[in-house]
Amino acid sequence: MRKISKILMAGILTMMMILSINVQAESGHPSRVVDDADLLETYEEEELLKELDEISERLDFDIVVVTTNSTEGKSAEAYADDYFDYNGYGMGDSYDGALLLVNMGNREWHISTTGYGITALSDNDLDYIGEEVADYLSYGDYASAFETFAELVEEEVLDAKDGETLEIGEVLVKIPIALLIGGLIAFIPVTVMKKKMDNVEMRSEASDYVMRNRVAITEQRDMFLYRTVNRRRKPKDSGGGSSTHRSSSGRSHGGRGGRF
Image (cartoon, rainbow, N blue to C red; front, side, top):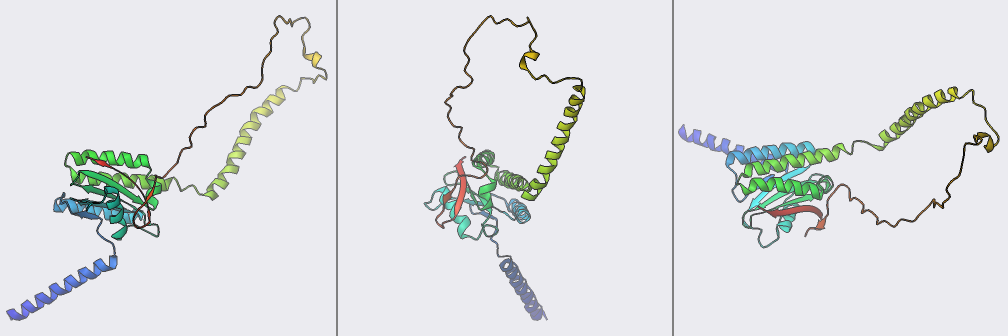
């Protein structure tokens, strides 16, 4: 009887393992938290993974955290870019996402962006996020650093998407409405002013408007109506998005990095 129970228990455990493997295979997505440097407690890693999965799926934008003790001879930028490209990260055809790398070997961080991440996160955004994250890293508060990274990236992506909600069709509708309102606003005071001038007669000669014996010219001088001013052209604003480079896979990446 005990032997049968053991066999049944082993069978159940085997089935559970198979089901677990199948679920992972079906999801087809690598873990968004890779803590090779072992900076997080088990419960912290679980909470962070849950948060990153929720935000990433909701925004359709991968947010990934990777820690390591060595970049294997690569620069932090190259390691972060390659880790993202060669491990199956990125949502959609343009591989939208952002990855934070923390290398404890050199105490450095690097943020790599791809796809919509390049558009949503400008160089200034990346600098700001990096500074906020680095403050927590320098104090050894790694859980807060990674949570801050996730929240700030989420905010920037949402802001970028909100800024694109005004479609061309909406603009075409709003322009004539604005013109109509502006015309009405201008028409009312002009009509009032016109009514007040009903008793004014038009004069045909300019001399009719000159008050006799009231004008005396005492000074004469030349005045130039036009002049040439040389000014340097103001550099154009680069607008949204960040500067880019190519990774070893050939994809375009944005990014910023530093030490802590």
